[in-house]
Length: 228
Image 1 (cartoon, rainbow, N blue to C red):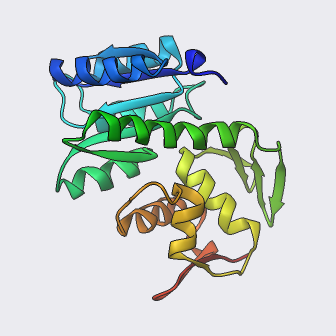
Image 2 (cartoon, rainbow, N blue to C red):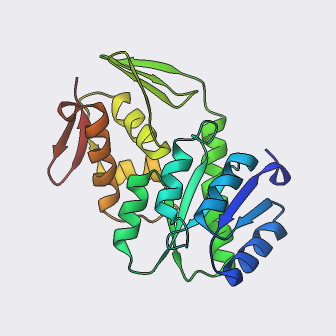
């Protein structure tokens, strides 16, 4: 996919950030759309079907967390990458963002060149996933459709946020194998992205709620494994 075909939606209530970030991303050749609150952001996401959405957390009318939850439930936007803009030290925002279905977060303030690099890294992961082989894998009573990012658990269809799906896919690729935390971070989030230590724990907790607690075992001080 060429840069000119990649659509990025930037949602922030600060005009300066909208102007600076959109200018730098447009200069890279991307199609950039902007919105200044969560309500407008959701509407534009549905209309434009972007490949990447950059969401501020604190916004009027609808905050980024609520907007992310709505976008994740919207047909056609399941594979869209969502990254949050959070103020430095707002750990609670980062955890809430992951629980809402975000793929990553970017800490403000951030230099334009660093932001562009982060965006490129996120889009590399998107293209890698888009070019992967279409697979349907069965593990016990769970069917994983890698093409449609869909899970069938005991006959019930479940749509998972992108990172939850990738984490489940990794753990089920080798049932009973213990995946170390650093391996999970590298395989699911990529070694070019820095995420907090609680990120994996949040995603495992959400998978336990949706798939079943008995399938996920914690190996203290090491990592996690999927058991049948």
